[in-house]
Length: 350
Image (cartoon, rainbow, N blue to C red; front, side):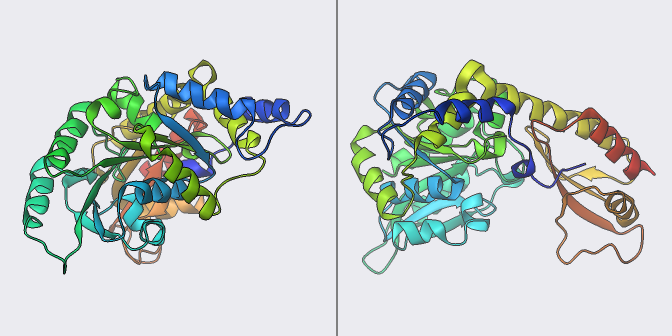
């Protein structure tokens, strides 16, 4: 019953098999190997973007921070949701790699920014001078940190506002595959066709050992990214092992299969939770992540039986009245089983 994070999931056997194949013999270092070139070409094909620049890094934090640094100057503002990953979970990496850009936090229900909110904030910055941070760029998270999804129309509406004010757009796609499966569209429709300039294309949360791709739809930014990646210590010498993971991920649309399993597991979990007395879902369940509030007594039963998940109510403990509501974040992965879901729901029901 591991619902703490999809980061906790095992790696699919196809990935290990691909790495074993890549381990045979010698290959040029630093991304100059044929496998890396093949993976980049495959990603360009998937995104219908023949001119895009594609680079691999080992972590989502590196992907996001380096991508933002290429598009936002040190004196710029990165407009993002208050609960976005770049705000809550990256220890100031975006600020560090951009050389000081400021994250400007926007509110929005269920983890999503609205065009009206973005418009108001950008308009308020219209008369800034040398004493103020300048408009820099927009960063969206899809799947959001609330487990909800921006549709292509949602993304296009937000990037249209950004375009009116002359700022580029980044998409944090750590769970991009989950969002894509939920939205039922093509990768291109959810990114550059909807106005996205640069994408952090996640793999680690969807089953990979450790690799993400940065897809820059404007190749004019490519050389700067290469320099920033090297300067920031994120250019792997034995690059073929990153590429091998991504090759397996894309082969036969494994990435979509894995995300589909995770999303389906979350849907089954949500259905089961609907039968738990006193439980309420805090956000719509649209991908592979759920937020629920339920009585402490149910938390105690689940935790004592070994269930793993995060309690989201500040300073919450298992000690206290059984009927007190306590929040939880529950994340399903490609390897979440029906048996785990049934057992967990059964424990909550008592």
